[in-house]
Length: 266
Image (cartoon, rainbow, N blue to C red):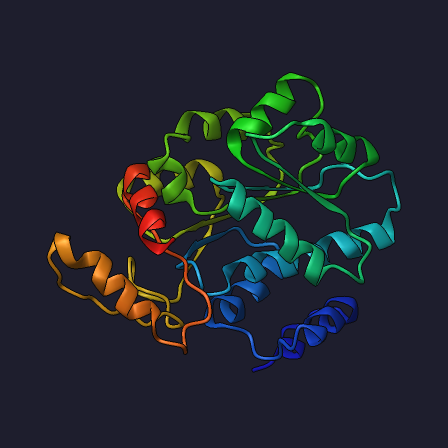
């Protein structure tokens, strides 16, 4: 199956072709037709399986076709909530990429930075808002954001959201959403508290699961090295001497640990 077989409109297909996307991933193949048919979806999918495109593409299509029928001033018709600024930025970039020929406008709001550029974008009008919970509620309290026009709502990385303590913020946001909307809920794992939350958000959802819960994405190959703490830095240097490795993203459990690694590398 190819993207063109999923009844995707030409402006989006053109953008996908420019990105050299032709064959959808499993989550995209299963979720896109359901979302285009305006079904609520409960998706279990790991990061790296292409789930952003799975909800971004059909939402862009809905918004594009809606605007063809009703060319009213831009309002926040779609809201995507995600736990971190990095994910929010990534999702915003995906909407820009897939929607570059649709005229659909998106913006991203997150905390930790001055809000001026974000509020300026909101004043100019947006169709899609990607937000982290804290900054979203802050801007709602200030009167910059109203959710009464939201027709398409996505809660992304729901399990991480709850792990990070956003459950009360999420409940406050959901209370402000219109009852009549299409809702999409994506989570890598499905513990009981996630299932309970999904029932408060979704109406007769269709469950989409493309990989075992808590499994690694097919695009990831994992290796485990056993080493003494005193020799970890030597192992790191040894690995980095492999000239086939062109980029490295290194995670450490603590800030002091990451600082030690930085000193070793310097």
